[in-house]
Image 1 (cartoon, rainbow, N blue to C red):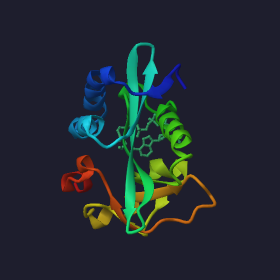
Image 2 (cartoon, protein in one colour):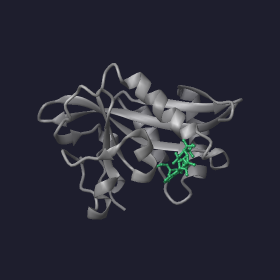
Image 3 (cartoon, protein in one colour):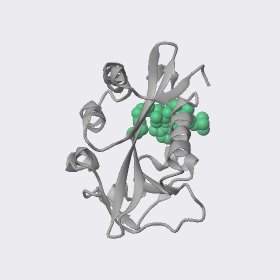
Length: 173
Ligand SMILES: CC(C)(COP(=O)(O)OP(=O)(O)OC[C@H]1O[C@@H](n2cnc3c(N)ncnc32)[C@H](O)[C@@H]1OP(=O)(O)O)[C@@H](O)C(=O)NCCC(=O)NCCS
């Protein structure tokens, strides 16, 4: 992996993140979601990968609850790495750094994403927890979770998310 430091994002990281998201997602504008999550009242874990002075990667983990038990879980996303430095381990380092920080509080993490990528972190398709908004049938396998605690029982119910995630457009194509 290139010489990259993973650290908690700070307010001054917002502008570099705008460019990072433009570069990493040329066909999709995820920056409004990022900005809503980072500026909202619900706490999130926001990690940046920094190389020298440059922000080269970012991930957000959002604490959520599963109804009806109220058990706390985390939702991973978005995750991105600047195009010139992809496939060098930065995305994996961000995900693992997040898991390390979340493990004390959460025993399960959810993601809506490509199973081919997230499978490397032991994410598996999850049919016990419903997404907060409907997802296309074709994305069923993309709704996944991973346990951070092998002794924990998998949760079931419906994911309850903070407002920033409560937008049906974020859950459909
Ligand atoms: C997906 C992404 C975050 C991965 O980060 P990364 O730093 O490139 O990934 P890593 O270096 O940790 O892992 C690389 C491995 O993942 C694979 N990979 C990367 N993106 C993938 C994808 N979309 N689907 C499947 N596999 C993928 C690579 O082929 C590589 O495989 P290998 O280890 O067998 O060679 C990054 O490629 C990216 O920002 N892509 C554009 C934005 C995006 O799609 N984000 C994810 C959805 S929110």
